[in-house]
Length: 219
Image 1 (cartoon, rainbow, N blue to C red):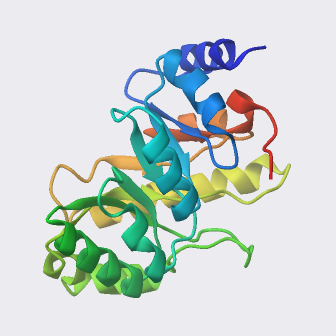
Image 2: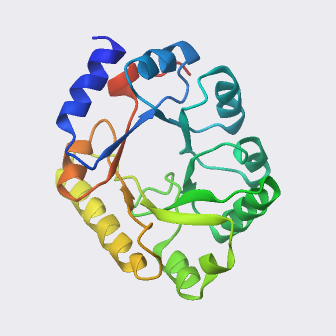
Image 3: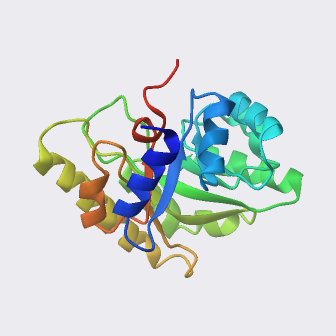
């Protein structure tokens, strides 16, 4: 099936109010352009330099989203234009994004990436740490970032009970953090190609789908 057909099939499966983030990392600009011509406008990338190059080459009404682990010295490549950073996973990174946003004269929207699995390879802020930072007013002191919600990944497993428990935990954490933010704290991003139908049952507002749209990645 074509990229256009894949997008249509996924959109038909998503309820109203759930946003589709097309994960385009490692895919060429030509593939992104096919998705763009099929009406897709939000794309997720994981490498700042690659993201900067694609931003320069592709239509300017695309909303670029940073989804991979972000090193503090790479923020400068994307700070002028990125629409959302979903991989905010530490106090150090929050401070650094705020500094770069200030230099650009803008406020950058972010999602707090939470670690909810037993897999040490997955990144994310530990719940107790982000809770303490939030309760202490940490985010309120950073005037050039706006926290829009939380993001997380479920355990990579065929055990559906484990996946459900991870999504339930993310939903609960988002609800607990919400009392420290205003109504713009509205995003719960969870669910990828393999598990997004389950994530929909737990109230996800954004699914991040790559291979089901673009096919296997070209590393």
